[in-house]
Amino acid sequence: MKVLVLTTTFPRWKGDSTPAFVYELSKRLRNEGLEIVVLAPHYEGAKFYEEMEGLKVYRFPYFYPTKYQRLCYGGGILSNLKRSKLTRIQSPLLFLSELYYAIRIINEEKIDIVHSHWIPNGLVGAFCKKILNKPLIVSVHGSDLIFLNNGFLKYLGLFILKNCDLCSVNSTATRDSVISKKIVKKLKIIPMGVDLNLFNPDTVSKINKTPITDDLVILTVGRLSEEKGIKFLIEAMPAILKDIPAVKLMIVGDGPERKNLEQIVKRYDLTNVIFVGTVLNEDMNKFYKKADVFVLPSLREGLGVVLLEAMACGIPVIGSNIGGITDIIRNKENGLLVEPENPKDIADKIIMLLSEEKLKQKFSKNGLETVKEKFSWDVVINRFVEVYNSLFISYYLHKCSSNMSDSS
Image (cartoon, rainbow, N blue to C red):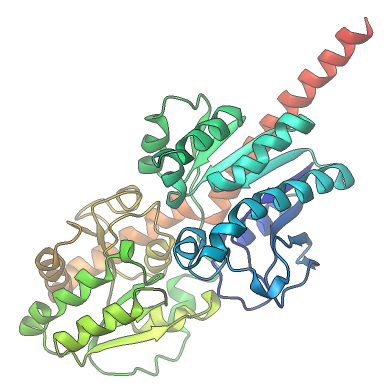
């Protein structure tokens, strides 16, 4: 079975800091015996074609000179669209170029199934289905739900979801947002997974701690954008310091909100907030090792993979009572939920958790069990393989049946 993966988020080269969950999914699907071909946007300095751990990776150009391609990567398409007129010009060119290369690859590689990640790539997938009659899976990751709620874009989103054979979503919250449109008959919740070989208590324990401080450490990880809610975690720090003076906040990640967040730190005269910047996934254990509690204070979150990574390492967690986070955290069982945009609630819950050792141990144990049972890559891959096999068999049985009817 050959699968074409359409995505706008994929490592541009070895060691790239671009989120790698589509790459990790594709790599593991290949290990299950599927042939995976990836089509992603080109970026200056990246190869137009290469093989990465058995995956055929094509990168399509969408603007010339290629050094001026600005729409993809970095802060993401939605963020990049706001930056300049050039990115808005490149948007239709991205679609047309991706469609051209997708059709060409489907024919040349004899693709059986198309799998589009994010709704915009689903538009290319839907046209491929119409033109070449190939089964289509669309995976909705949460951040792309704007295409179901925003003016003209929602009509494109409806067209895509009406024409896919199956829609996978990463959480109950994402599912409910899609179902509310009353357009998807076949819809499955399949989250992205966590690599338990990389993220686990044993692996973390083997790392030399080399602490930056003897203080307790609050850790948060993610792109520094408004929807991640880091502002409210920083604003909670003065209250936390009154009860627990020996505590530091480590912020891992980068993004468009960094300067604003640094200004908030200066405004509160906080000397205990550390901006680490971007860290490669394989190096994250060094920071999980330092953490006494992990906090994800998001305002919107499709799932929250970094939350799962922290839990897999045995770190007690706190997350906002929104979106896919509520699929992960069972309040007071394997973590704590806080109200979004509420620094006081965040401070109270952090103080509670750092002050009660038995509660930390309970959350650490139960959190690890949650990840193993529901969110390991082994569990996730099995569910995707079942979907692929079901679509492949039903589609080609129908095709054989149609051919027999035509011949008779």
